[in-house]
Image 1: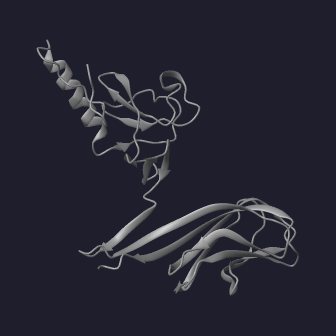
Image 2: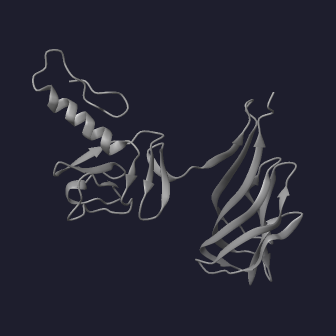
Image 3: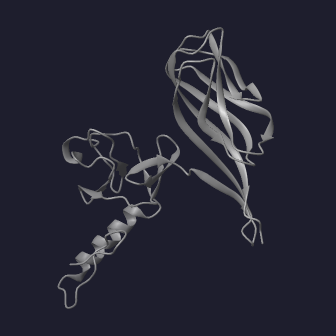
Length: 239
């Protein structure tokens, strides 16, 4: 029996007996997948007493009935686990974290990555976006990272997290070449240290601009940072 392309809903066959079985199966799958909201995406072992229709995104190192189903959608339907293979573009509301996940290129990612907050009839758009990356510090007084502020972006701030202890300086700053402390100074060195660098006034950049981290007191000798750029972009000319 053939299934539909995207949701794998079973089709009725010509002259099929007990058609209601196939129809009810398709309806149950639709009920599980449409307006998708999962209990959690961090559970590796099936819950002991799932409610009818409850759904989870299976976390890593899955066990028991979920073994080998990591990243898939598990729904409790008619007293058994039904496993669904997610497709690119599926979106799920995660109840325990109050967040959206989007399935893309084989993984669930926090999303949406960008949001269009206004659009004209001629496709001029106002869009909020983020870029995030991990930067391994190289020896020196400063590092111009590969986190680049896009041309004509309006930046609201940059946030940072120390992933591995920063060695060498007594603290570090976060900014750009023209203002190395624009988004933070006297930032901690230990893993877990954070910075939320909010712009006093949203700042426009005319030309791609690398984010700079600079050492205070002595040069960098090592460490790893995670940096995220929060900005607004105007695109489309409305022609």
